[in-house]
Image (cartoon, rainbow, N blue to C red; front, side, top):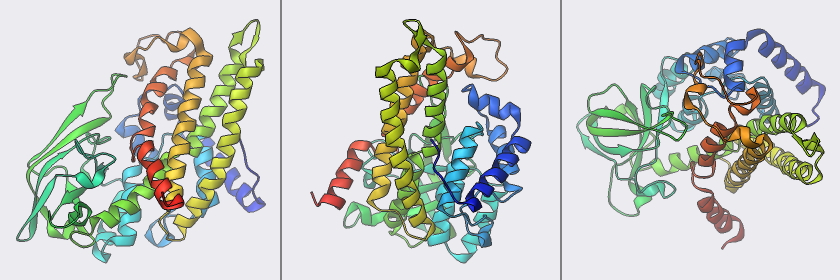
Length: 398
């Protein structure tokens, strides 16, 4: 699914495609295409290659080391990198913390942290969810008590993606129990190497452990690592979540997944002819493609508003709901298209260099892993059920 753009944007697309053909290592593209696990070293290698052109954070303003892309350029970048099977940009520093620091951080925080995100010095993870505080994020219980020039942090975060690789975590912490629960939350930057921090892996159904529990016991954090004002972290949290939810929509990922579904449906046969020629199956593909085209247009509007310095409103929740459902439905159709080849799941086959032979054709190898892993899409970043309540309240006054 491609939209039509002006010659200026098509020139950017051609430049980007040439860059990807020349600089994206085939080894990394093959890993992504085959659904194999991408390591921290792989991500760091790709991040460094992108930063050669100031494209790691292309949407950042030029004064902060970005390329100053507008909404269309961001959209084209996502389309082309997913089409080329490039590793995703790890979002926590570039997509989440960076925009937060630009809007709420002090000059000293911007000068210190932003360059370190771009040059790979710091690897960030996100400390939001807790047991009993997921979609109801304001229910967090991790505390940060002021002790002179430090906060002393105690508590637990969960579902912390890639925390096993991170050397820093941005955290929501409770600094006050007075008033409404949203009013006592602050936003802290914490060094993961500080004493008192323990990371415990959560093993997933595909055999991996990309998410973790993070425990804090009497962790001392310098006061200068507070972003914004004390007890004003809920405003920052909402700002970050709108950016996260827009990113979760994943238009580029959905585009590539849909193209892959069409390729598989052309190769798989049913009743003696390609599956894509089956009227019912073809109608399902067409329905998803139409919805994806509509979502891409909405995504451009929302990203454009964010690029202008505004936090997306209810539209980010709309994108999150629709985008995650579309991606899950594409995963489900792909699983159905592969038939019995989608059933076997051998975790070791997802490791690069493994001697385990995949069952069936290579295009079927990553199908079950993606299907299972992407069940999370409608839960994290605020469950779709909660997002629908937000939409009803903000748009319909319900």
